[in-house]
Length: 73
Image (cartoon, rainbow, N blue to C red; front, side, top):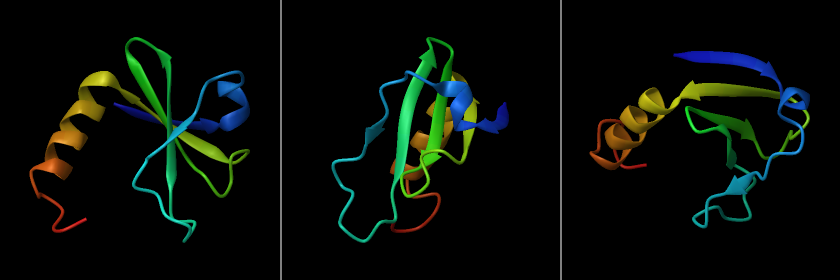
C-alpha cells in the first residue's frame, strides 16, 4: 500500500539519504515513521510531498530493485 501526503506530516523524522547519492541532486530520502511504514521524499524538495509505503510493499520494491527488475539502476 502507498499513500501520498505533505512532508510536514512527517515532521521530526530522521531522514536518511543513500550513501550512493552523488552531487547530481537526483536523490531520495527515506525515513521510518513507524515500524510498519516507510516514508520517501525527494531530497531536492524536503518540504514537498512524501510517499508512505507499508513495510511489506517497501521490502518488495527493494527486492525487485536489487534483483534487477528495473534494469541496471
